[in-house]
Amino acid sequence: MDVTRVSENVYSIGVLNPNVRISDVIVPTECGTTYNSYLIKGEKNILIDVTHPRFFDEYIENVRSVVDPSKIDYVIMNHNEPDHSGSLEKLLEVAPQAQVLSSTAGCIYLRNILNKKDGYRAVKEGETLDIGGGKELRFMMAPFLHWPDTMFTYFAAEKMIFTCDFLGAHYCEPRMIDKYIDNLGQYEKCFKTYFSAIFGPFKPYVLKGLEKLNSVEADIVCPSHGPILTKGNQLERSKELIKEWSQPETHNKKYIPIFFCSAYGYTTHLAEKISEGIKSVIADADVEIMNVNEHPLDELAGKINNNDAFLLGSPTINKNAVPPIWNLLSTVDVINIKGRHASAFGSFGWSGEAVPMLLDQLKMMKLNVFESGYTVRFVPTKEDDQAAFDFGKRFAQQL
Ligand code: FEO
Image 1 (cartoon, helix red, strand yellow):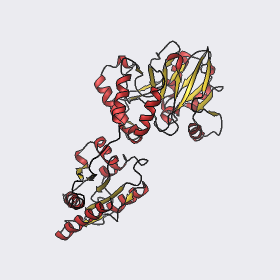
Image 2: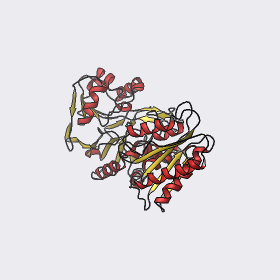
Image 3: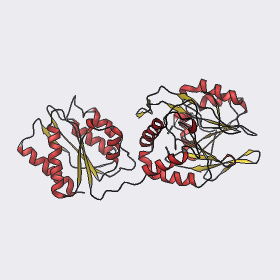
Image 4: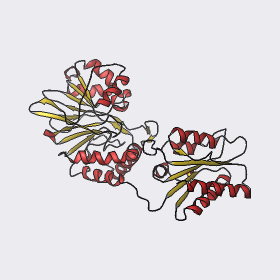
């Protein structure tokens, strides 16, 4: 990537990865991504965030095009997920005198990322770093944006803030500043996908992060994925969008989604009977029955994380629940959903492992698992229908 000069002393020196289509194993990146890193050049030379381990060679060339790495004084790690910290070990080989600064949690992670006990300095909320020329950087803790270690680094002299994942996007265009984005519609689509995948579980922290961001004068926001956001271009809209997406959802009625897959319609039938049982107890409950194969995963992810209780239905295939149900479970926000009422059901032919496996997984995720689920061998009889109805009824009675 060409180095981009963001201001007189600040350079964007990260790496483009336009061809990647999945990040962090599960996050779609249909427009690729970038691993941004920034260099403040001056009396002190400071790197902010590093880059993905696969791109060190390209990265260090970018660094060298602006400064001799042996002249780097500080490396500030706003967040230490390896897409940002993975090249740090190699960087420190060519910048041995650089001091690494991160949050307290960040320093703990670094010990196991670099497999080295010391060499890091933990900074605290509000602490400042004198970078010479009468300028300073200020550290602002921003936990869970996106890991507990995250912090922002504010550069008041340039009205600039470095936020790592926060306000980022998996989006790759060669010119790193929002005013040059060629396809704004596509960028906003990727911005939303990224937000849902990375920050969906941390919405209360997003609102706190926004407050923190708005507490300082920042005309330029430098994230660590996607374009830099600037006042008068995309910055205000991006802040508005994530504020809107982070509002707590309110349901006037109890919302109880039933997610299922069905090979021959028998598990679908059970879903309907269980729903009738629930409604016999909570007449105005919003019970939404959804075939997981007929809805996009991000829509389902929103619904499995925002409800009063939920149920999963799966047939058993190859002694297992079916992949779309496991995929859906991989979107569950285990931090905020702890204690939620949930259970599973399904029709099976031979051995019926799907429901007990799903229940074990729900228990591991610390949900409040109801009974032993409900299963039927092959085609539900009238008695099975009644039992499914009663299962739904008992499930609703405990809500
Ligand atoms: Fe881009 Fe949470 O790392």
